[in-house]
Image (cartoon, rainbow, N blue to C red; front, side, top):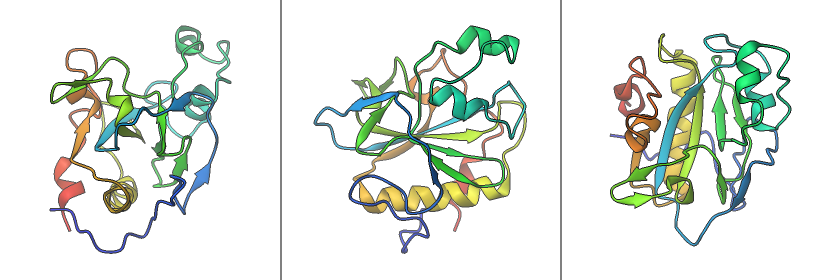
Length: 183
């Protein structure tokens, strides 16, 4: 079970984490009146299965150069974002206030409710479906989850694959769900 002790990360009334870096994404809009009740965990690496570059930030800020990598030419026009990114070293980056709707889930449904972006916070882990995540990422993720539980009436934590089955596979088979629940 998640510990609800005072988290190392705190979420302000404006929806921002008190730790990490803030890089504003233009890819968000106002939430409908839905309360924030879901956390969606994703994985992302740009270029695919390569870590540490600027590709994710460039994608989420609409600055991805299609000439830098063949895969970028396929995705550079997409308008996507997430609330948070956790890098391989555990560094936290925030792109969108939790109070706004980040564009991370796409076509999705959870417990009969469609459009999961309306009521969820999206957390991207720098990684892929093909290798394990780092301990530092789990530490940051656990602290972030605890802070989100403290700030909002979270009812569930799911993977992108849970809300978009058949369309998405992340966070993938190497994501260890037990690590986010262990104390």
